[in-house]
Length: 374
Image (cartoon, rainbow, N blue to C red; front, top):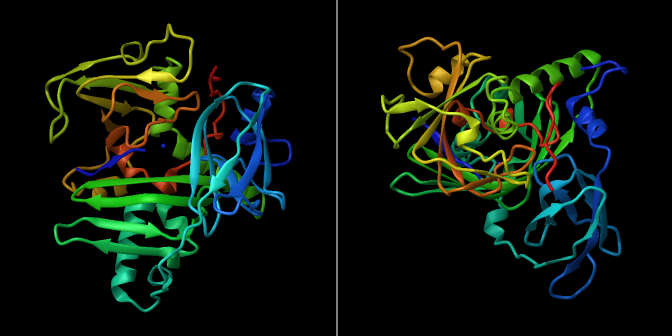
């Protein structure tokens, strides 16, 4: 049983999920401020400032100033990064129509030159890279169309007892040709041991330009398929109390178990997991034991059977996942993202789907909305 410890086309007359979201939330906010060198106090030109997990980002000008507009209200992680300096981030809530000023000072970071060595002909490094791609990008069908454009920035280490660690001295550039996104990923932590994979980092999405309307249509179809049944889809359905309508069935397991399903389970609902009477956001999500989540509107990928190393059965007509909370309660924002780093552990289908199947926070298929945070 594998599992992950969590951190988080059309013609001219048609719109994507991101564009529909912008139309439905016209009242947006602004982040602005200045980025300085912490040692010298000088302004930093070209520092990246972005909202993690979104397509919203900008760079500083010669005066070190940035202005990030079009920010939807709610909880966000505002991240600042620049080559040669340590990355920094702040978690913040913003109201509709507000301009928030936040300044940052970045500490210079000196890299060991051994980290910067490109080991092009190192067989061990290539083997480690293949392993990292399987664990981080994933092994779903969409993973075949994902490329790390700058793998040379990665270094790997392992221990005799089986721990595998990856580090990146520069942001990873990930090109997802299945979903039409280019992702700049600032990898903070990645480690794998036994069947447990955990990572932490910040991502900035950029929509690729489709070659033609056919490619645009394929990308939108793939994005919908990647979103439906995902952890984010489930969490949005949970906080909006639309579990049944969105095709989810929930069971509580009274205690953790090594093998699933267990006999000690019972049906539950969103009302028992989140207090919908509280109009304040973000939302508090809590349960004990383990939560089983069955998505009934899509079947299993054949690759999932190979991934779980259980070739004795055929793919099921539904997808089954499990969640276990490492902290209680967890905080879920209005976009359906868990705010606590490593706040939950996911098993089953949620664990099978990795970076290759990830869509940005703004993406929503037809008929779904994001609840504003206040």
